Image 1 (cartoon, rainbow, N blue to C red):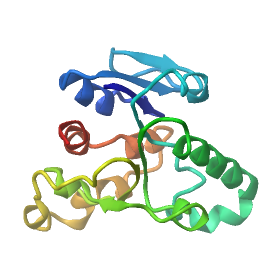
Image 2: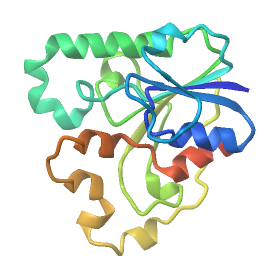
Image 3: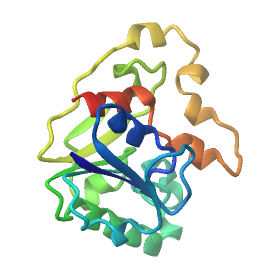
Image 4: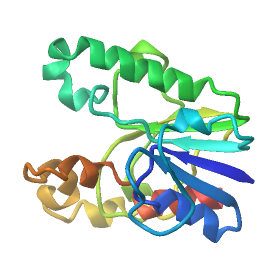
Length: 187
């Protein structure tokens, strides 16, 4: 399959699909962190290039409910972010997965088809992640480590929530967990 991994700079999801033999390419305004097929630019430049599937990770800065306290100050930015999500969601690609944390996408566009946690895929971490699916099955848990993870202190199992402020905090919080990427490619 020809697969577009939209809004991905890390290469994690792209590489999981490449390992399975797919023709996968990541796309982001940022350069890729790992060598591999990557289009640096606006995803709208290539979205109609004959992809069979797209997994998109639109920026959550103006969408995630974790930033709800600031919503009143960024009404226009949130409106633009939602329009971008709609363009991705309703693009002319047969199979689509939109990935985002719990966000206003659920109330302003539609509820997610599935909510997953990294611990369902072998990662010792909690971070609710919503999936909006088009012509794709829900992900099945591949290695649930919930009981083992719950033995960790809260600041370890919710490591991403406790990251200190930094210029790269948003990047570190936005990377897809390898276990989730591998499950996406496997399933």
